[in-house]
Length: 180
Image 1 (cartoon, helix red, strand yellow):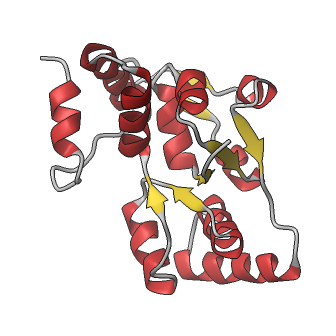
Image 2 (image 1 turned 90 degrees about the vertical axis):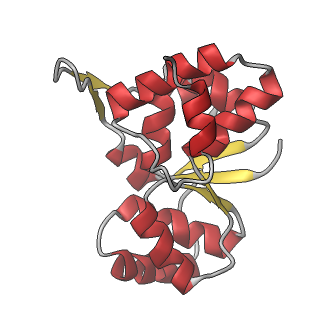
């Protein structure tokens, strides 16, 4: 298919919250992989307006081939997992994503800036991307209107509480697509 993205919970939750996870995952020309710890971390979306929780069911995304499973298989990968768990101090899903990416040379899809900074100190050559870059790629590849993207970004903000910092390299794109 294309580039393999080992996807952290932060990005996967945002894509599910967008309401178009299947379209985005299938329409980027990349192969999205998740590890077991990430699957365990992706449980619910919370509506920031009503407080209501909505369960997340990833099974259809696996069934339709939009997501694939990736997990440690070698002693070296398990050692890297231990190292990243100690380095990050939390987030077993993040640790597993970085361990597998380092071992296999794949990209990581993650939005957690703290984890990114720590991982880059350990392995400065990591290739990473995040929710905004994935949505921008999908928009470009599929000629999606700013209006539709704006509706999706509002859903991401409402259900996943994600909004990029003004210092984010793609903040101007977010603002352009944001309705109003």
